[in-house]
Picture 1 (cartoon, rainbow, N blue to C red):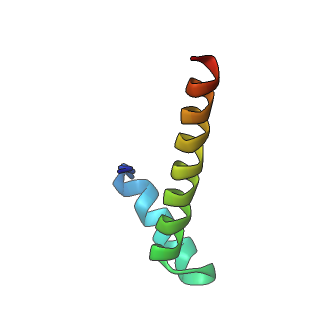
Picture 2 (cartoon, rainbow, N blue to C red):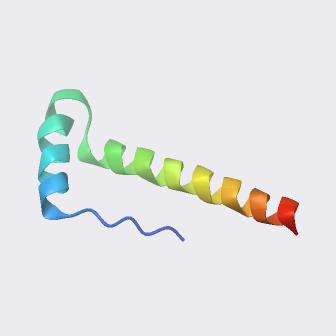
Length: 50
């Protein structure tokens, strides 16, 4: 499971941007996908080192 913490200021900025380009949920989905990819890469690195 991945937890993303977003402070209120950033969240409000995302909302303003989101209305123009994409929904807030789309932005969160992209952040989650990025987090999953980076955690998968770090898992792979740990396995390579082990």
